[in-house]
Image 1 (cartoon, rainbow, N blue to C red):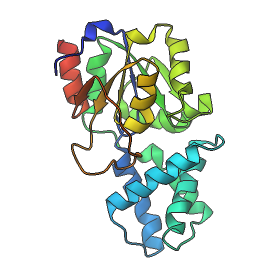
Image 2 (image 1 turned 135 degrees about the horizontal axis):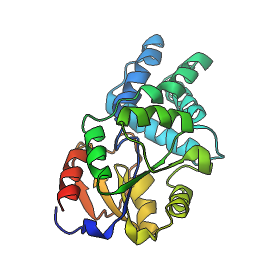
Image 3 (image 1 turned 90 degrees about the vertical axis):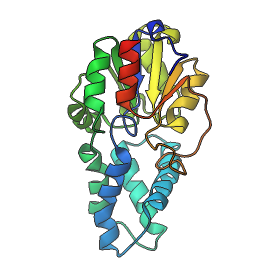
Length: 234
């Protein structure tokens, strides 16, 4: 865990979904009902890979609220398996973010880190859906930047740039913490940020609900509890 001087940083910024909120569990849980309704049986990893591909394609187009992005993702997932999603199924999947669970270590880790650092979040989500997740995390972030506010989805850098504007510190004083290499580490490193990779998948094959990407984080930890232990005691 050596090699990262936490005294260099005043602010920690976080990705939310995949890092603090267990979005893969939430996605799969929300897919069960529509898949069952259409008689579709598919392996979890295949579903997550399809989700990653369709989500990235939709987010790369003109801005739409994340609820609508997820609705389109469900439609594409079902269409690829010979079925048609109903408007109600799309709406339910779009709103399912509010039910996605926090990782068990997230709340305590954030509370510990908040004793030493200001905390921000840069998230590919709508304001109201993130607010439901923030309650699960039992923390009030000092700064919140959502895709709804920037009308851009990571890996577009606008969310990071808006965070810089709001924090008012140089990137050298900010440490970004995230699970997704594709959404977060690639653009963060291009912007000169130091990063911590929370490798939640723990060596599982594939990249799950995120498209594959290559980046070089400054520190890798398996979970938020480890990061909090390292950062608070450093």
